[in-house]
Length: 57
View 1 (tube, one colour):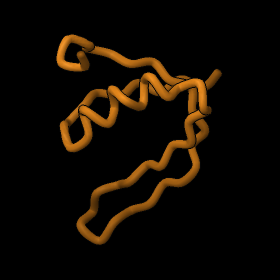
View 2 (view 1 turned 45 degrees about the vertical axis):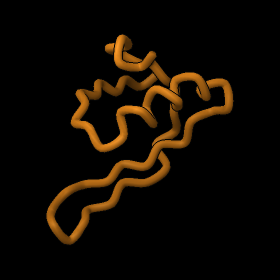
View 3 (view 1 turned 180 degrees about the vertical axis):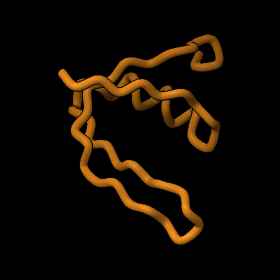
View 4 (view 1 turned 90 degrees about the horizontal axis):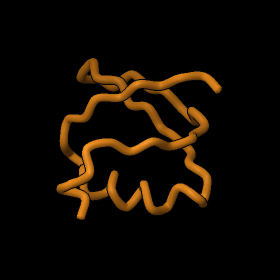
């Protein structure tokens, strides 16, 4: 199913931002329980490069 989905919209709290030893940056998001269907799609995409746009509500 997620191979046909091209975008996912979620609400999230930015929980943590860390700079790693290799220079990359990890962003940890806390998603509410009602985002579980979107999380299933994100799990299928884990490890892939994605484009993110984050807007303050």
